[in-house]
Image (cartoon, rainbow, N blue to C red; front, side, top):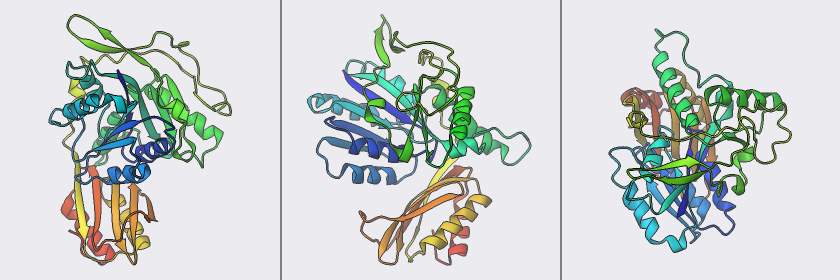
Length: 370
């Protein structure tokens, strides 16, 4: 059977960058990738295609505008069946879920009669934006009456559930963090998901491919009426305490190893999308100044429940990639993309008002966005 690795993680955790680096270091593995985005245009898909650079042994399938494998997704099973038909040319399938999706939706469909005979879950990886974790951005709001409580609670719930169903948690964006911060981050992960089996560190958004693919953490179990994934029996230890030091984390961080079973029968209600999460695209036909736009997006994120922005803007003589997570905004020239006359940005937030954001963006940049 073809092994499948699911890569989950909240909005802006760095899943796409991590996957891009895995592709570049794929060695001889022939990969099929399913890239899911909540927005209506495929920014992540474009970035992954750039990483693949036309590699004939990497096949990429885009799933924009929705949550992969959720109830209204009519493309997941046919795409996986098409991959199974060319199994002689596929060594591993990688599925990047949207930052607003749970991995259990994919896990459940992998167990259906249509897919169970061809695919085996290898592992589920949850990528964490470590600085956000340490700055309490995934905590619930203490004041239930606060206007920010609904956003904070929805974020916290989704983040906790993504961790709960992961085999491996990858602490990402850690390059500026010291050992004490890493220990605290690990403890915060363990507090939320004590049964996480492995914890890895991704410096420069890179993870040794041997720590991501071919882990074989699940095996198929067939019964008369259903097919379920259970963890491999040979999982060492249980209730092991948090490491005293991260200096030894060259490979697997085997702290807190316990086996856990992804029984999905009781989890179907998790796959109902929270209608509060909204996504829209704004466009401008005017040239943008990258540093001006950067400051404007920071101000918009302070004023509105905006959690994620990504896309490309048209700047003088170049296309510029924009990546924003809350008030943390990065702009960088994209040499692989030809300059366009149109700027196009995807906005994702909780009960985010499109008109309000468009008005703010237009006013503060002095250019028309709609």
